[in-house]
Amino acid sequence: MSHNDILTAAGFTGQELSGGTLPVFSPIDGTEIARIMETPAADMPAIIAKSQEAFKAWRKVPAPRRGELVRLLGEELRTSKAELGALVTLEAGKITSEGLGEVQEMIDICDFAVGLSRQLYGLTIASERPGHKMTETWHPMGPCGIISAFNFPVAVWCWNTALALVCGDPVIWKPSEKTPLTAIASMKILARAIERFGSDAPEGLAQLVIGGAGLGEALVASKDVPIISATGSTRMGSIVGPKVQARWGRPILELGGNNAMIVAPSADLDMAVRAIVFSAVGTAGQRCTTLRRLIAHNSIREELVSRLTKAYASLPIGDPRQATTLIGPLIDQGSRERMLAQIGKAKAEGGKVHGGHIVTSNVPQGGAYVEPALVEMPEQTDTVREETFAPILYVLGYDTLEEAIGVQNGVPQGLSSCIFTLNVREAETFLSATGSDCGIANVNIGPSGAEIGGAFGGEKETGGGRESGSDAWKGYMRRQTSTVNYSSELPLAQGVKFDF
Ligand code: UN1
Image (cartoon, rainbow, N blue to C red):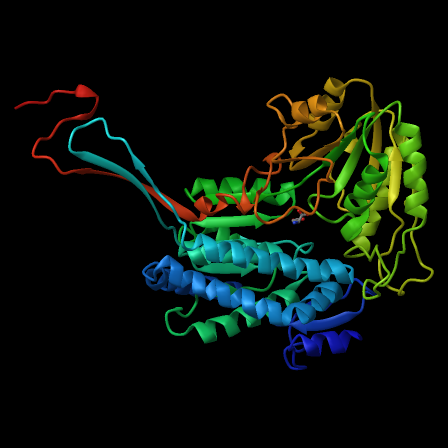
């Protein structure tokens, strides 16, 4: 499909796509596909005030009824999956299957949140006093600001929005400046769900702001936006986190990853190779969960590298709209320059580089296409410790599992990790308190492509936030502990006497 066909199928009119100030480019060929209107920074106070108004109404709607809106959103997403998936491909450059997969991730989290809307369980707690009852209840928290990145332009919004909505919180979304069209299209899909849902949904329940960092700063600075869920670089998070905390807001941060795989001597190498290739080069290495470090036992390291270089050479690189393509473009030329610069630095540190060249033949001109790089390193250098948002896989060797776990944990980031082994002692050690220090630790599965049912996020410079499944919903609500005295006495806790 041509650029225009994709835009039209996603419901855009010519008028919406022109006359604004924010240029939008397709990474497929670098062409400008729209110039859209930006939200004036001066509008932010009114937008936040509207969200606060919406909160006053939405928190009174029973949670299962709030879940009905999310159910309808899931239904609308099912209907629009092909069109939105294609738009993700056009605007973010993801291959077709991954564009569709991203929309599926939205649908999945909607399903999860619908169930959750009837399960926002609190606790009853044994009171030490006679005739007393203690309970813990979860209440809506208030507007949730969502700052999302280009690489998962819609799924991350949906993780946050589906949970926030069932939890009783309105949302204000500031997407990446590189991917505003997928955001506008997602909001149209949500608008259709709201239309069907009816008047229980207050105006301003979900708002979108389009433009630069100033808009995000307004959300981050406002006491009226108690939750800020931000996905992006560690640099961004190191600014956002402290600012939100300084005004006693709650940051949910999902920042950089530098994800590793340990390949042990007993590993099923055929499976490991498949997992490595998908997680290192899928999404052109632009997932926060992308495999960036391969820690291979020295007895199998050479064989693994030789299998991988062969596999890498066979990967179809090109137009992400073609069904056979596995590696699409990087988001832009700047990204490609950063990749090449990091490869140069790794070389200077003693790295032996396979691949990593610019690709210009058999790809659409104007896009930033690259061969994925495999870089054998003598040790875990400064360059290896940095996250580069591109398909560079550093290969390191090890002799003992303890050493491998040390290397795995020896980076500032702590998002995802995995081990390939058939040895239960090694697997369980890796998952134990002395094993991986990451938020996600897998066995015989790569580090990327997590299901929505688990809590998603990581430690250290990854920011500590959790989104998506498990009990991540608690991050979107406030906890209230209540003690009710149904006796006719007034005993004090801890046996304190205060008679007068
Ligand atoms: C991200 O790259 O910001 O686990 C999110 C994964 C996806 C989500 C990635 N489910 O790779």
